[in-house]
Length: 389
Image (cartoon, rainbow, N blue to C red):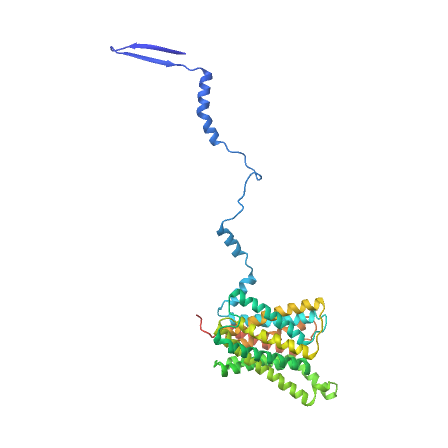
């Protein structure tokens, strides 16, 4: 409905139009104006099944999650290898622990008796393969820089002579006497490092070595005393008497001297090449070939069973890790300091034997373990003498 009115006021005409819209038309107009607002304001209902999650996370989140998932063991190994103040001592402690673990596995998984040369050949072969893979993946030259190759060759020769002499002692001497003779190797290494590498040998370091060695003597004193009594009674095999016994002891001392020279050459070669695995690889090449020849010449090859073969492989991997950590420890730290840490293996062996009730916890064993642990702890507590870069 529409109407128009005319108003005549002060001489002027004004026309006012009033437009009236019907109810239906007004409703249509209002709905046209409101509908877009409602359309934009409305949202679909959301539940846990309708939400779409992104398949790929941002790179920053993935990096943070990866960093938090690194295990404590990996961090510890990285810190030990990284060259911190205690890295050299820690690497040597890890090497001794690996050798101790090998000893436990030999006692637990001794399924069948494998000849010594065959065992040495298997371990050296696995060490050769793993060190070769290590050098290839790190892009290092297999035979090292030209100026270091003579050191690596001498290290391989002295290392194998030491191993061969120790095998002879194991066959000709009681195990306790052979172990005591091999424990003189850290002392020989410290003295020879003073002569060959011109390292300072402090009285405190020499006292720590002497304390640890006396600990070894305390631990094995009852066994050695028993063997002496049996020798007097005539109950020991003829190989343990007379000149053969003296020759075996001299060869055991020769093994310790060559081991000490080998430690010095490992330190020199690892520092010159800046790659400790090179010293392991050079030794593995010579030792694998020589062990194969000795195995064939002795005609003592025995085909191992399945479980024996698995244990030999596992022991080979542990031997590789022990050699690598030993070389890294000698690369980072003075010979006289890290050599004292090697006595941890003897102490841990005795503690494990007494804990598993295989050995009687005598006074001598307890005092010996205490002397070694105190000496090694003092050495580690005093830390490194090298200058931090």
